[in-house]
Image (cartoon, rainbow, N blue to C red; front, side, top):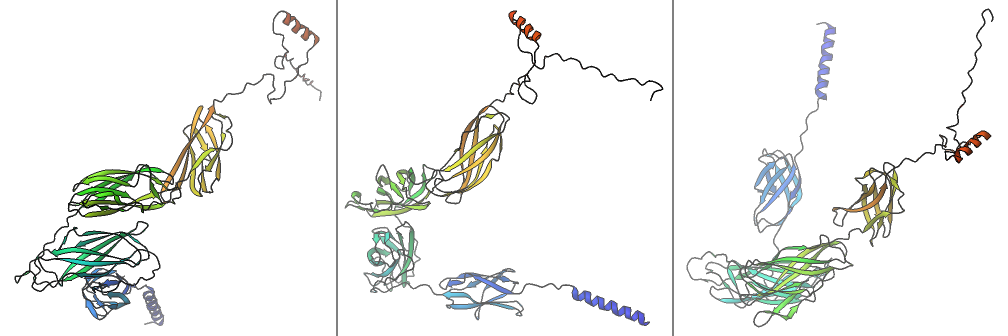
Length: 576
């Protein structure tokens, strides 16, 4: 082979190698874990966690520490895993391993497993010591509970005594306790007890009578759910749930096989506000309005002698169970924003059968010092049920208070006379009549009676008593009164777009061409004086005596003497 040919082949091989090395090699995303959701679980129940990351494949294995858990492949960025009940508490590293066991990725401290908060069961434990919290709120806790019997027995009534303690930093209002259980029946009060108010660092005791709903053979414990509802002084509602475990006497219910307890419904009255509205579209400080409520009895017992208390309160019953006016406590409600007018905040609504609904109204006024915002209004329904139990159902409705701009559009100087087809100036002025700084959007001037130029501008902020001017040019297209529509855009206190629309009226006249004095020169100057001869003046005198026109002749009607024609000499032949 010739040397030149060999050199050519070598150069060709080198170029092929360079092209191969320059070709980009696709890079796949590396296996990794970005997050675990949720990253904290309680081990008393089965929990499902979601692992987010990259480059996941089917058949991957998920480990919590050294323990492999059941997992499911969702997609390349998501895996789901099951944390079984009873999983040991601790902080775990979450690891995913590929099906071929060659690739792994870990997230240290990715999951924390904790045990549920224990419920106090000691019968003589002192109330917990109040602790200082970074913010003030009522906080109802269970101090202790006990029974007047050693254990629950089928067919035997017993009393469950409970002490509730307010360990928060504020007074708890309208505390209501609700007991439910699938194994026990609530006696005397249907499982609902109204506790009234509990001051900060104070306790209240209550007793609930119960009995077993069915034989409890083979059972060692039964549980009671206790839900405690109460309110903050600003109307915010709180609900605490406690699970009370009660021992069952050995052999309770006979030696036969244990029967499956049948869940039993709660029989009580329950008054609920199913709808409410105001006769004013927007409520502003100082507004008088009518609040309309729709009240329904959603319970399965009738409510007797219902009293509605706006602002919150309670009514105690007499020996006969009917609430009396002397037992109504309704003066300590919240009235700083909304206050009753025309009547008190207490109304008697009569009786409500199960499923019955009724419309109720209350006249209120918005405090002039109220700031824009959403305000809860507490409403209490006090009554007695068919068993003579005194009940208090608390409700909260929310009303929105706005402080809308108060502005006026006018002319800051009189509008000059406008003529059809002739442009004229509109000296517009926007004035802030309110008592606060406002921020407005675009101001737009429109009309159907002509054309507007410079008819839009951004207003911006206006201080109390401040003003904004806009000089627009208006070319009328019709005569007579013409209506101008001024629209101001802005956002209200709840960041919703709104507009203010006002109208102004201007008078437009027809346009007439001015009459031109024929004696005036074309440039509009003074009439050109005409020089008269004696005979012309004498002739006008004679015309006046005869009753004919004897006016001074104008420049136009003076006879014009013809200009003499220019004589052009004819050339003489032979002469230069």
